[in-house]
Every structure is written in C-alpha cells, then in structure tokens.
Image (tube, rainbow, N blue to C red; front, side, top):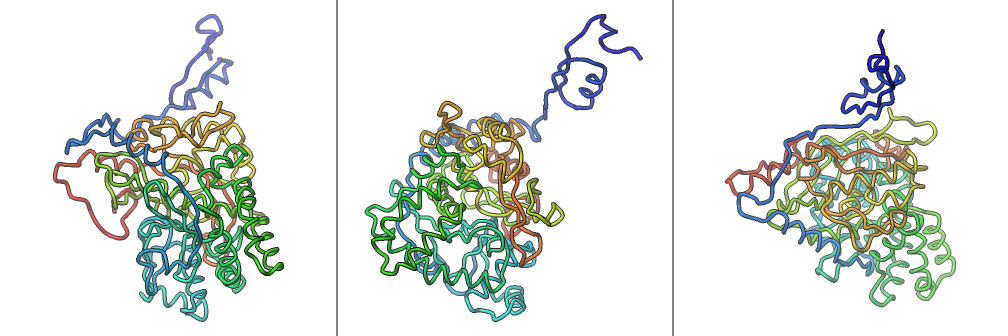
Length: 483
C-alpha cells in the first residue's frame, strides 16, 4: 500500500475536518494530522435580528442581560412554603422541571412525592402515599410556576421551610427548601423513616434557628456577593459549594450565636451546616432564580431565562415567549458513581439546579472550579474548556462573576438560542445522579449537555412571532415538542 507520505515524496501535515476515522487512518501511516471536531449546526443558521412583529432582537437581548447582571440576591429569612409561596394552598406539591403528572414521573420524583406525603401526614405508609398521588389526590405544579426552584426531584410541600431570597433592584422574590445533604435524601427520591425524620428536625429546629439569625442581620445576607467570592475560591456554585457554604457559615454564625438560647441547638445547627458542603446550593439556586426572573417577557428576546429537568424531560423558557415551555427528552448523565452503582442504575437528568447556568455560573463557571472533576469526572482542563466553549453561545460576560485563572474574565451569561443554533453547541451542565427507582437516593454525579431540540423549537417559535402562529398548550408534551 502506498502511504500518503510516500505519495508526496515527503512528510506532509493534514488537517482533517469531520469524521475522525480519516484522521485515525492517516495517523496509522505516520502522517502528522490535526483533527478538527467539526459538527454542522443541527438546524439552519439563524440570522434573526428582528422578529416579524418588529422587535429588535439585539436590543432586547442587551436589556435581558442588563437585568440579569444588575440585579441583587439577598436572603432575608425563611418561612413555611404555604405562608410565602404564591398559590401554595391545599394538597399541592411543587416539582422540578417542566409540567408533568404522576403517570409520566420518573422514579426519584415519585419517591420524593411519596416522602412529601408522609412528611405532611397525608399518608401513613409509602403504599398509601403512592395510592394518594396516583389517584389524583394531590395536585402537581412546577416550582418555576411559583417563583421557586427545587434541586433534583425538587418537591416542595406546604409545611416545608423555604429560604426567602429577594431582589431589591426589581422587587421580586424567589424560594427554595433547605439542603438535606447528599445520598439518601428526599430530593433524590428517598422516603424512608429517617429521611422524613430529618425533614421534621429541619422544620422544628434548623428553620427557626436560622430564621431568627438572618432576620436579626440588618439588610440580610448578600448571596450574590457570596457567589462572586466563592468563584474566586474554587467553587462554581452548582455542584461544588465548599467555599460558598463556608462563606455563608461565617456570615450567619455570629447572629446564630446571639439569637440562640440553647447551646446544644446552636452546636447542632453549626455542625450540620459545616458537615454539608452542598448546603449553599439551596441558596445559590434561588439567587439565580431571583436574578433571571426580571429578564422574562421582553419582546423579541432570545435569551434563555429557565432551564429545568424533571427526570423525564428537559425544558427551557425564553424571555420573548414568557410562560411557554420547550421540551426534549432529558439526557443521560456521564459521570462517577458511588461504590456499588453504575450507569445502569442512573435516572435521566433531573432538577431545577440548571437555573445556575442560566444566571451565569454553575457550568458556565467550571473554569473557576477545576477540582470539581473529582466529583463529576473529567480533567481540570475539561473544566476550563467547558467555560471557554460557553462564551460562543452567550450574549455577554458577567461584570460581577469573574474567573481568576482567565485573567478575571467575566463568566458567560445570557444563553442565546440563536447562538446555540449557529454553533451547534448546547449548554454544558454538571449534576448529581439519582437512582432510577424510588426510595434509593443519590448514586453519583456527572456531566452532560442540554438537548438541542428544545432550543431549536424555541428559535422557530421566536422567528414566527407576529405571523399569527398559535402555540400548542398542555401539561406534558413529547420530546422535541413545545408545551
């Protein structure tokens, strides 16, 4: 066989664009190959600059980013969900992701629903809880429809304490439950007696102690400032929250000491926060929610304001199309598994925590947190590359969330569905992994990309604005369709 080098009579260098098989064949012949991982856009490239209704897309996007980056996120206290979350009345449970009902819920969401029914006293056993939920005895609604976010299964019940995070700049609020820790916990679908007992201790002891402490702090605790500082210290504030949790503990501990009348309770509260490196996640999430909500409803805007998953579907909402979900099948997570578990045990992608990426941190700030790969897999360079790639699909760089090892460049912010279409790149995400069966809990953590279909559907809908096209409605939808 005549080799490529022999054919030209000298060593050659080849740039291969496309199929990697060609590069492998040339390399086997001793050819110096540069292999370019090129993928054509999955949909037609969008040059959308003005909608059919006349809206200026670039101006709308600049306004959306301005609102996201200029907002504030301050935790001012806690309360029971039924007392502060709008529409939280009767037997209602909020869940993560786009709308879904019991018959289509994945295992961990069903498990969390059963655990919440036990916690509320609506059922006396897991069997009774399952029968209640499956018979229509409980109403289900997305957290995002109630200014709320929930990690993983995302289930919020009326008697659960929630953080209150306010955005004084725009006058809106967001809510989230407190973090239980990792492993066998409600948000990963566990519902055993110790899970319910932990939730009740959090409501009876942790909630009032933290609420008293935070309300005693003038002007609350600035969570946005803590996120910015945590990024400097090696967090990305989605799956790595060691620095954020430590910073929050420093901020609240003096007030906890001043407002606590029981030394044993104070010690238990401090120890719980200290032992749970993910405690800050349930503060960074509502902070992201309260920052992104003001950007909703801008005519012609192509910026994503919500990304969320319910373990069955991945859904996004876009500023210029307020209230409309665009969904695709939730992805499979590639990652690291706890001993005794494997990919065969994993549920599909799950949770509202991708609101962090929507607000300009989390996966967007992976370059801040190279150590995260010890939890989700990959290499430190992968973490840096993930952030660098995300600049291609975002409209701007954040002016507060900065990356030290990129010369303090701002994190990518403002995911633009047009840029996703043009580049063929969807947002990179990092996440926990729940067992696919109810009752077991967390089995690992890993990485994946958001599915392209929902971004393509959203772009088509924005391009059609003003032509009289109507949108489908419903509470479920199918992969790749709009709901």
